Amino acid sequence: MAINPVPDHVPPEMVRDFSLFTSPGMPPTPNGDPHAAVACAHDGPPIFYSPYNTQDGRGTWVITRAADQRKVLQDTETFSSHRSIFSSILGETWPTIPLELDPPAHGAFRSLLSPLLSPKRVTALEPAVRERAIALIDRITASATSCDVMKDFAFPFTVSIFLRFLGLPDQGLDTFVGWAKDLLHGDDVERPVAARKIVAFIDELATNRRKDPVDDLMTFIVQAQIEGRRLTDGEIRGIGVLVFVAGLDTVAAAIGFDLAYLARNLKDQELLRSEPARILLATEELLRAYPPIQLIRVATKDIDFEGAPIRKGDYVSCATMIANRDPEEFESPNTVDLAREHNRHAAFGYGPHRCLGSHLARREIVIGLEEWLARIPTFRIKEGTAPITCGGHVFGIENLILDWS
Amino acid sequence: MRIIVHNAKCQGHARCWAQAPDIFKLDDDGYILPGDIQVAEGEQLLASQGARSCPERALEVDRTSAARFEPAAMQPRTGEA
Ligand code: HEM
Ligand code: SF4
Image 1 (tube, protein in one colour):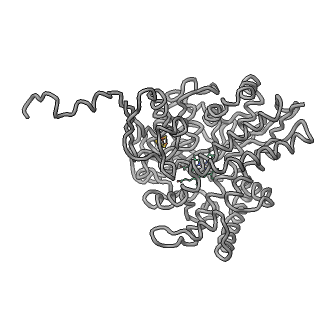
Image 2 (tube, chains in turn green, red; image 1 turned 180 degrees about the horizontal axis):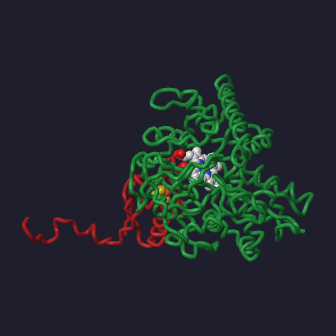
Image 3 (cartoon, rainbow over the protein chains, first blue to last red; image 1 turned 45 degrees about the vertical axis):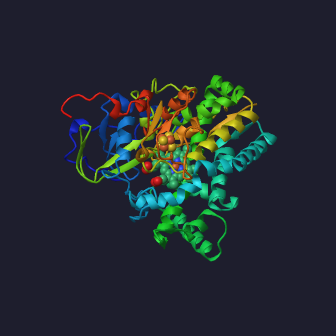
């Protein structure tokens, strides 16, 4: 992987040896706490330059304060989302939609999708979500007093809900999880292979739904109109790929980090188990403390932003895990306080690209925790095992073996 | 008390609604409906909590509830006018 040299316009004193990919705690680490590891970004200047801060080794400005991230993410004219994160893996430049479109084009696609994931729609999905959680947990407790939470619960739970939403059968689950894993955490060979499989899969699904429409998301997309016309094949692919990738890994990672926290903090675990009404608020705090995503923008023009000489074409990183540990925004940011109020965390981003799936994701996490705590007695990390965490574009956790024997 | 709604800033987080669904009404996409919100007596705490939960700072609490009873026309005018 090539590291781009630090551009001339970046003052040397603004360069910091910090990276969401290579700093301590970012590569796969047993018993790691990557979110706490990045909190050190607040020890220095509020904005600095990291010479290696994307999957493909590019440098980015790093915006550490929540207030500044809000400014960047709300100002889509200066900070564009068009950066082909997915298609660049294939050496291509098409945008995933709506994620990598800027307003005004962004708006039409976003309006198309928002009703499908609105708070009302999600409320209607709730019984199915709860049923799925209960079925999975009952299956686990029927035969064991320990399990691999990611494999046995977090992934099957979140991905099957998501597949139902997309209109895909559950049989594909392991294959899809494998693709997502290779795409997000794989090496330079695995990532393009996974990306190509996902594209081929989405293209084929679109072709099938055009021929034989059913009641699902892909049928909706191939039949939809914006501005009085049907969507192009490229647009359909852009939406399909994004929705596929956006929902596969994120919720599972969040649930994994949350359960790992509770396994290590038995007082909090007991509090939520004995007073489940607290889970709603606690989920917000866990989203604050353990959010999975780094957001990237590209400067469309030269701008001196809060003292940083950002130039056209520069990458700007708004890592939600850094904003969420900003001492100017959150009192005692490194303390997890499950009763924290007025918790305006950045887990779902700010501005026009605010996560469209946030209402669904929240429900899934709340329901997952409610049913897990109601059905599983006091659980800990299984002795002799160590969960493995990693940083990167999307933070992750695996080998999380919980034990309640 | 009233809540000033800055619709352009609303991005549909629906956090206000999650706090107080009867005060903060959303459209079908989950964005707040246009128009400032007059808060009834007794709902002020809930309303201000809802406003404070907006990640985009789209909701502004206006506590000068007397303001609307003092239209400009009734105020003594001074100066050049
Ligand atoms: C805990 C789980 C999740 C987290 C933390 C999360 C986080 C985010 C963030 C931070 C963004 C903004 C990206 C940017 O501005 O560049 C985003 C966008 C998006 N997310 Fe999520 N997400 C989650 C789950 C989901 C799920 C389950 C879905 C789908 C059902 C979803 C669908 C989307 C879509 C469609 C966008 C693009 C919105 C746009 O560009 O207008 N997300 N997500
Ligand atoms: S919390 Fe803010 S952004 Fe969200 S719906 Fe309410 S007003 Fe809109």
